[in-house]
Image (cartoon, rainbow, N blue to C red; front, side):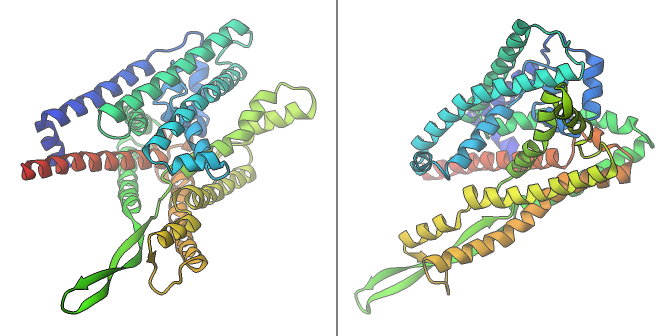
Length: 437
């Protein structure tokens, strides 16, 4: 890894791309430090110290949400818009056709995602304002003009962040959106280390325990990210020999199915679903009658470590099942659709040895995919739900203080591996060019 970075900096073109990427990430961090006036710092800190999911959303925004900066929403609206369009490809034929048109179709879909980001960002910005007003972070007497101004500022922050990510993708190295989230998580490391050492127990013991757990999670994340099930496929080609005549030769290859095909997207799906009751409750908690009481109950109790023990158990079990269910759903509809893959193999005159083309191949691919995806979904659910609870028991650190949990480590590891693969691909391409010359 270090050798690849050293070689990349030795090449002027790659060095320019790497420096551009770093510059854009520093620009994002500068934006995250610009706060919106009017928030109560003490109430803001209290709100985030007692809510695990707000802490997770804060990580995705690079720490901007806990400071109520102009990039408080981060890339959440754009990520949600992209996921929604991916899901709609299965039900809207036009989007499905665009997805099959290659680069030109991808550009159109990305344009739709940008337009969809605007209403989603406005909706989420209003939700943040309502949540902060109900939590006494903002004054409950905020005027309509002030609310609209804050919404437009948060929208502008999201669009600027999205633009920075696209610039990194086009002129730098790696996926800009992923790298911005990566930079936001890394920026929280000093704060997380300080928090771990200051909460309960001994400073050295906590830091050492968290370090061991982090190393184990990193090793497992690398193993699962690179793991795949390879299904052998082959095709027959005709070979003409002047002496022996025409014969057929089997060309063998593999069809890979990644263990963690959906990455952290199933976790994002599950988080959004689990946040919905409490978010809706924050909107209606001041309503009269049983609606307001129900909203207050969800705001106070619907969390992994709040309310009665029974509620916590139900919450965590439901969360665990949702992560696995969304892993299956995303893999079957977006990443590896068995019916589509079977049709592609049939059109390419390829087949799985011992399996007849058509529906039998589709059923076989679905069975293999389901077994592989179950392992990946179980791993994601364990990292997301079980790991914070075990870490809290082993180190004495509250789950609400786990700023760098399993999900954050997964993102950091996978983005780092993907970026290094792209750097190595750029180096190999230049080595081949030098050899040809």
